[in-house]
Every structure is written in C-alpha cells, then in structure tokens.
Image 1 (cartoon, rainbow, N blue to C red):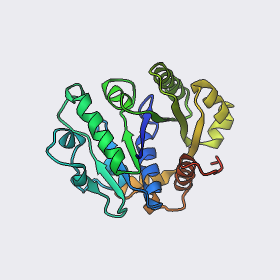
Image 2: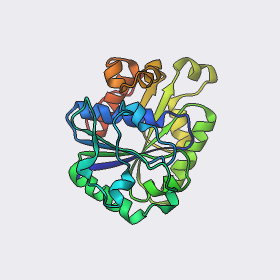
Image 3: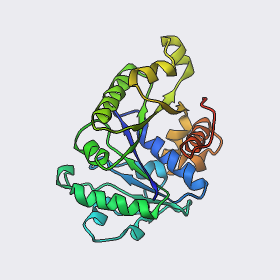
Image 4: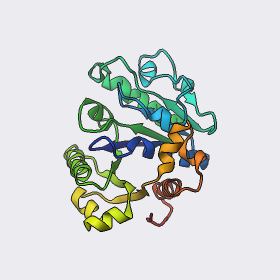
Length: 245
C-alpha cells in the first residue's frame, strides 16, 4: 500500500504547488512510482510546476465517474514513473462525490508508491475533500507572519479532526530577511505546533523553470531548492538527511 500525502497551506502564495511538484519529481528520480493529483478545483496549476501543461491530462473527476481508469493517468514526458491527474474546471467541489473520491485514492494507493494531493489553499470545501481521506499531511508555509498564522490555523483544524501525522515545510526562506525580523525556524515551528519536515530556500529557479515549462529538478538540477526537495524526500523515506538551506 502506497503512502498518501495531502500538501496543504493556510493561504495562497506560499509555494505549496511548487513544493508538491518538487517532492514528486525528487521521488520519481529515485524510481518511485508517483501519482500527483491537482485538487484545486477551478484554479489548477500543478501541471505548470510539473512541466506537463501540454500533456492534456485527465481530471480526477473523469476517474471518479468511471469514464477512465487510473491506467489512463497522464505519464510525465521525462519521468517514466510520474503520473498526473488534473482538477476539473467547471464542476463545483461541493458536487464531487466524497465516496467516489475516496475510492479513487484507495485504488491509487494500491498502484503507486506515493500519492500527492495538491490541496487548495485555505480551509474551504476543497480542503475538506482532501483532508477527509488523508492521514499524512505536509503543511507548507512561508516565513511571513500572515502565512505562519494561517498555517497554525490549519494545524489546529487538522488536530481537531484527529489527524496525527502533520509535518511542516517552511518554503521560500530568505535567511537575511529572517535575521532582520529576528525570526527563526524554531519560532515558526512553535507557532504552528508542527514538527519540521524541511526548509526550502527562496530560489528564482522555481519561477524560471515554470516559465520555460520544465520541472525544477530538470531545469536546475543542483540549485538550492532542488537540493532541499531531495533532502526532504529522503527524510520522508526514513533516511537521515540534514535540515539546512
């Protein structure tokens, strides 16, 4: 049975989607079979970060309704073990069957080593759809006060739902800025009450890779953010790896 993670955040702009794509491609580099599902109904963009915007992927709703099977998920053009389902555009999330979505995830866990759900930012219906079927969460936040406060709110909500496996990724970290405002990663952990999975530095290569339609780990293999994503997936797999920028 594969591992199922929801990638969540309290607010937009934290880089949650780029984190999801970075982790998925880092695992695919290791030969792991990975399925990414964009769950941001109406505002999908995971395909851009994965370098799959020209692939014409099916939506997860196509699978839920039985029109297609998981074997029809779009395969990445460069990573043979990475697959993708996009979000539907014209169906309100409230009209998506929770039971059908749950069956899709159960079937996906039987076929893939890892399943990543790129949840919409915030705690509305799309968040509830993904969190209802997920036991493991990666909570992405920036280091700004609004992002940290919202991440703490998401952490509290997950705790109220009985979710025990929630780990924090602090993204887009600028060491100089942290020093100026006298903020540390430990402070962010304390505020959110969440153990740390990793830290990803601010890296312009993430934006450049998306602009050129390539996944970050192929666009700039040794850039700081790419190295951070590889360290995080090693830790997710139980291998010791340093937490550093």
